Image (cartoon, rainbow, N blue to C red; front, side):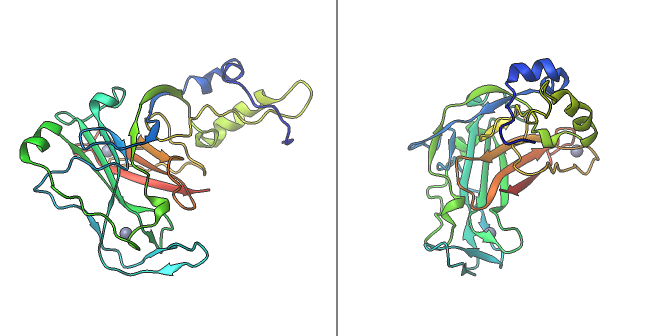
Length: 268
Ligand SMILES: [Zn+2]
Ligand SMILES: [Zn+2]
């Protein structure tokens, strides 16, 4: 495809491949802005509302490493257990487009901010659904342990940010479509002058809830043990550097009790 091939507007796309445009779903874009979020606010990288009677999660993998202050020097680092870092906290009131399990109105994500030898990205994320009133009534953890120097890779830790969620129509990445569908649709992208337009993409690359994953590599959806493909829950991308990683994606299955979930990440 020529480097100067025109990009399609969303309007062109709707005309040329209405079936693709019809796949759009509503996503909640989280729009983080560096700030000083409180524990009762939705945040990226902010202190979470954590129950006093629940120990803060640690990662005890033995293959931890980090670049440290000089990115040319990969530093082997085997410190034992390190505290995980808060990534995302969403209160239902701030993300009306996101469906919470019955009785829950708070979603939290933490992960280990060191690099793991076998995965080359932030790993071992944990995801929690909670009831805000119940957490508050039971008392809060007075101090969330903070990963000390050498216990995190700065690329994997978001700057504390408040969120200003907004909704947007979000389509699948072109490479998220089954190959036979792409092959059926691609002839419609041929230009009258010969050649083709770029494949269309109506996917929003942003940290978001719902919608479609903002894969930077070919799609890699997890299947639930029940045999169904999981649904996209969250994409965390762009607003933190994530080293060589394009994004971290969370999925769950709402058909199964206990909301089983899984995650993926991909590289640039
Ligand atoms: Zn770890
Ligand atoms: Zn399932």
